[in-house]
Length: 457
Image (cartoon, rainbow, N blue to C red; front, side, top):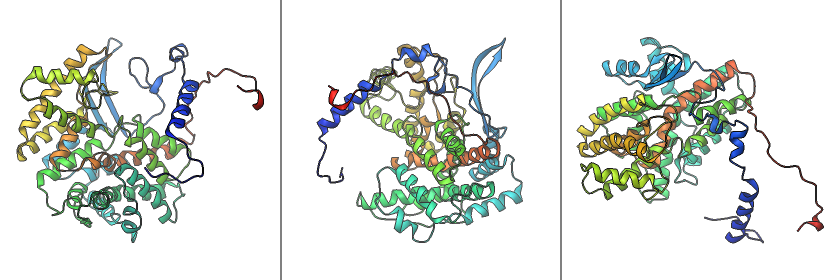
């Protein structure tokens, strides 16, 4: 990596020594967290989240109360009171795309009628354009292999093109959110093409979106050199966008949106902060990890139908002997759900259909077998306080790989969907809160007497 030139340059050994000093003087006794009843990660010992706010945007249900006790159940997800399964069944039964309708529902709290839906799609299409020369002057300058950084940089730069960038009146914020929702696919796909061309030496494609197409169709059209895709490919990608659009106020990136919004900052800064959160592998980057893990599994396990061979590999993952040595089976487990993640159950059905169309059933069956065996192995190897099931990342990465999408775009695709939820929560925070979010931290430092420089050892 190139560094700034200075007369005095720090060696890696000096940095290492300084880092050791940082660790030595910044470690907190782990017993103090229990002593002071600190909810690390804003979750209690049983994994229940600390209540920090109220929302009407969505709801997650993962248990029911029986005789005063919470009993785990199959997970349910509601957007503005509507079960996600019912919403998707509604789209599917009419053979239409649902992401744009989901955006409307999340932002405005009700399902649109036909006229409202058509007007809203036209509004989104009218916003689906970038400022003049933005692709040349911003997207193609200093292309990065990390598309989330590229996306965040583009969002922050758009601030400079907005004459009312700092105006946080509701009407202006809604306008900004709708524009960002509309152009996120362009920023993501064009950012990838720029990187693929300038860093990888591949051909450069910049395809304009078609105003009459859905978000899912435009993503595939802009990404592929021949602009072609099947109806099923677009429909399954649309379902994935709907499932990723929102997931309560407590997930890291949405909570980030609300925290930053509460400070009174502008929309571009709030969304860039959310992107920075989503970039993390503990949040939005997990689907790419699932694909990488399965690539190693497919190369390591000779017989994909041999359960014992698969179990051995899963144990190696947990023992930090395989893949990235992190001790995780990616795509398994969720902070909230235990019995099942409703998004994973829905996505699995559509992924199977695409696997049949793309002749990928052998690989789909391997995913299904790991989904079945992983909870058993985890229960045997680890002490866990709740059940473990496949989460939405488990099948989304496989879906994207069948669509031929580059791994660099996996997390940006998550962002393309989730900005709908971020926008709804930003609006809700502005409408209802009025107070800056400022949680408490207890200091555990020891008071010390000042020592003059010449007396320090």
